[in-house]
Image (cartoon, rainbow, N blue to C red):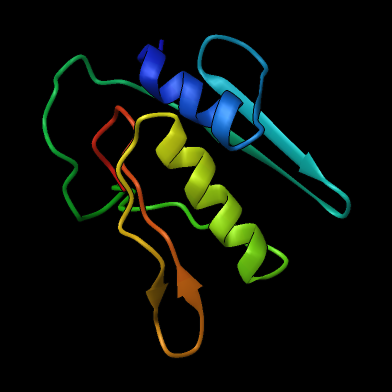
Length: 101
């Protein structure tokens, strides 16, 4: 089962609903995504490579919505990367329990 911090980040911050112990779903106007969280039983930092997930990206409507996510994430006690200009898009990163961005 995902740790409580990860579960809270998915449901409370990112709007996912719980399907069962390891599956989560998010639905918006024209899209739907399902996330399967599998824990290995070891607590190591995420590594890049085959089958590794470095980060998950979500789209937002505009800069105001991105800044609102930042406020919500930080108010929940998570640190963020701050609002980053990637030259062709803006981004925000945070770690939530499972040590991946």
